[in-house]
Image (tube, rainbow, N blue to C red; front, side, top):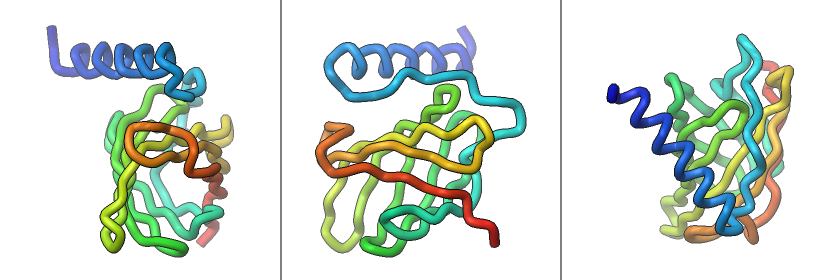
Amino acid sequence: MGPMIRTTLGLALLVALLTGCGGGLPSPEPLPSGVSFDGLWDTNWGQLELRQRGGHVHGRYKGFRNGSVSGTTDGNLFVFRWTQQESRQWGRGYFQISPDGQTMKGNWGYGKTYEGGGSWWANRANR
């Protein structure tokens, strides 16, 4: 079994386990051709810059707090772990990107939960 198949199976299992255990994740849908999470986003919590390489996405946010996000994609769903340098807090979250790739919406939580911290929405920055 190749690394790509193992990664895909591992992510599918993770999403299935989290969704089945009340993880609060929406069902992923196919990502339209030409759409990616890569780029600069204006969010309700400040500015977010994401870099996508295949099924992996990482980035930094600044504004209300400063920190980073890192995770994987499954179709139009980006599931991540966030961390803040100053407060040393961390948690989990997700974004689901729109079919045109111009908006995202999701939630974040503290620790191992995906909810409870608040909603996190974003519009692609036109700069």
